[in-house]
Image 1 (cartoon, rainbow, N blue to C red):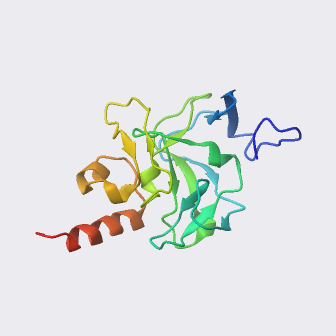
Image 2 (image 1 turned 135 degrees about the horizontal axis):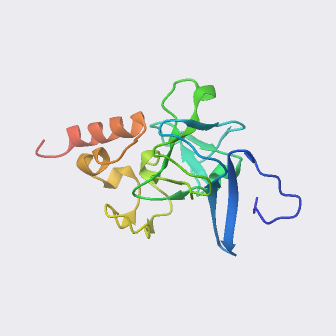
Length: 172
């Protein structure tokens, strides 16, 4: 759902709001301050879905994807993110988005796509301009363990997939 659509209602109005500066760009902004580690919102209304541009990977398998069915789909990527989709609990009712850094009101929210995505359908050139920008974002499959270890948060199945890949690599 496009946020400017008539009748649009924010999913988490007390916490985040969709910001649309242009026709094809949108983002989410914090509506209040958050501290490091604070749960910003539980992930509710999720549905199992095929791998797609709007889905989030929630486990190691090729069919482990969910649709967020909320404004959270508008969180953009950064190589230096300030939030995480924490899908580490075996119980999906405990999944949430949490702050990785202190956030002030009106801070644009970003997450590191490879923290959930192994192999993305639509790779893109990153324009986050952070000092540790990776350039081309394709998924964790294309990153070294060191590149992933340099990040604040990576979901456990991504770490396991990297360990499995590196264990099977020739010369290891």
